[in-house]
Length: 139
Image (cartoon, rainbow, N blue to C red):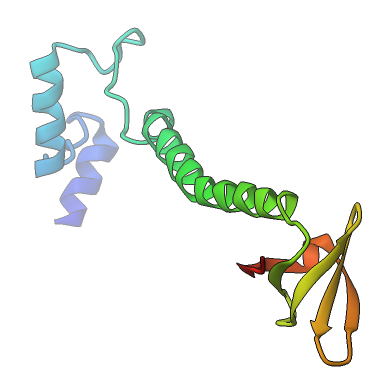
């Protein structure tokens, strides 16, 4: 079989055998025939592959939406805490971030003096940011 093929090609009489048509080649040829495009035509438009820039158009707004939803809760908590620290006044019962409970005796710019023990009149100074929250108010 190979001897005959070699002789045929060597003689130059017959054209080289064509590649067998497979299913994928047949579907490509039928698609090209349906579109009416010529594979050698440089102006022929080929279909775009999926993905790329078109996908980014949908992904970026979704990421931005999730970011706003997640950060919105943190901003509300931060505003609420800043308002609580701003409204802090004398005789408020508070708890610090370290868990120390006391009564506000004096408030300065960035300091708060707490009375932590009634019997020995023990007072401690804390940064205003060290106050976790107001427990109750003493009238």
